[in-house]
Image (tube, rainbow over all chains, first blue to last red; front, top):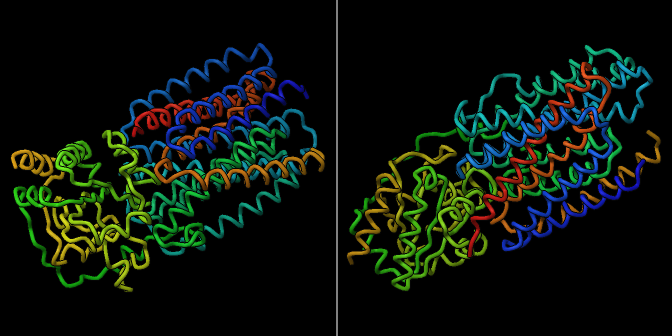
Length: 461
Length: 94
C-alpha cells in the first residue's frame, strides 16, 4: 500500500469535512463547496496514480462523457427543478455503487476463482442492496416530481407483505450466494430484487411527502458509497459516505418533524394514503374576495408585512414581482419579511433557493420557529402559493389529515391576503379553513399577473 | 480481508458518522438544499471505486465494462453535483 496515496486520501477526507463545516455559515458556504470539490479532485488523482497507463484512454473518455452530461444538467436546470435533479443524481450514484460491486464480484468469483472473503462478499451484497434501492427509488421519485407519473400514492392490496417476501427472498439468495459464490444467476436475482424493492417502496408515497423521500434517498446514496468502501478496503469512501449518510438522516428527521411523521413511519413507506383516502367533503367555506386596488391600499397602509411563500409562487414565477412589491414597501418604510416553513417547496431549503434566485436577501427569510411569535403583531400577511403550511386545522381539528403538523401562525395577523389561482385544495388534498376566516381576503388570479397589478397600483398611491 | 482491517474500517465509519451528525446539525435551514446537492456530489466518491474497477484486466471482461458504466455515472454525480451547488450558492446574497 503506497503511503503517498493513503496520505492523499486522508487529505481529501479532511477537505470534505472542512467543506461541510464551512456550510454552517451562508457567507462561507460557496468556498466550502469549492474546497470539497478540491477534496474530490485529490481523491481522483490519488486513485489515478494506482492505475496502469493502458487503462487511461477509456478512463478519460468516461470522465469526459460524465462531466459533459453533469455540466449540461447543472447549468440547464431551473431552480424549481432542483429536487428532480438531486433525485436523478442520487440515483446515478446508487447505480454506480451497484456497478462497482458487480465489477468486483465478477473479478473475484469468475476471473481469479479464489474463495471470496466473507467480509467482502457481505459488503458486495449490501452495496447491491442499498445501491439498487437508491437507484430505482430515486428514479421513481424523479418521475413523480416532474409529473411523468402521478404524484398521488400508488397502492395495491398486499403491498407490504410483498415487500416482506422480497426482503426474505433477498436474504435467502444472499445465503445461497455465500454457499456458492460463483453462481452468477444468484447475483442477478439479488440485483433484480433490490431494483424492484426500490420501486415498490417509493411508489406508495404521495407527492407531498417527497421532501422526506429525497432526503432519505440522499442518505442511502451515502451508505451505498460506504459499502463500496468496505469492498475496496478504502477509508476515503467510508468517510465521505458516512458524512452524506449522516446529512441525509438529519434532513430526513427535520422533514419528518415538520410534517409530524415518525421516521419509522417513513422507513415503512406507504404513508400519504390516509390523506387522499379519508378526505370527506366538509361544509363549504365562504370566502371574501379582494380586488387589486383594495389590496394595494392594504399594503400601503400597513406598517409590517410578512409574506408566506409556497411552491405555487415558484410555479407561477411570481418571485420577481414579489421582490418589486418588497422594494415598493421598503420605500414606504414598511417592514417586509418572508416566513419560511421547513417544508415550503419540494425539498428542504428549496424556498430559500427560489427566493435567492430572485435577488431577495437571505436575511429577510425567517424560519418558522423564529417568526411565529411575530404574526400577532403584524398588520398584513400575504400568502402566495402556500396552503397546507398555514392551515389552522393542523392545530384545531383532530380529524384533519394534517393535524399535528407545525404551521405558520398566519391566521393571527390582523389581515391576511391569499393570492390563489382558484379555490383548489393544497398539495395534501385538504380543505383550508383559513380562507373562511373573517380577517382573510382572497386575491384570485395568476399570482404573477395580479401581484404585478398590485405593484403598479401601489406606485400610483 | 482480515478482521483487523475490518475493525479499522468500522472505527472510521462510526467516527465519521458521528462527526457528520455534529457538523450537519449546525447547517442553517437556509442552506439545506445546497447542502443536499453538495453532499450528493460527495457521495459521488464512488468514483474512486469506479476508477479502480476500470483498471481490472482485459478490455472484454464484465468487470471492466461495469467499471466504465460506474465511472460515467459517478462522474455525472460529482461534476453535476458540485456545479449545481456552486450555481445555487452564488445566488445567496445579503
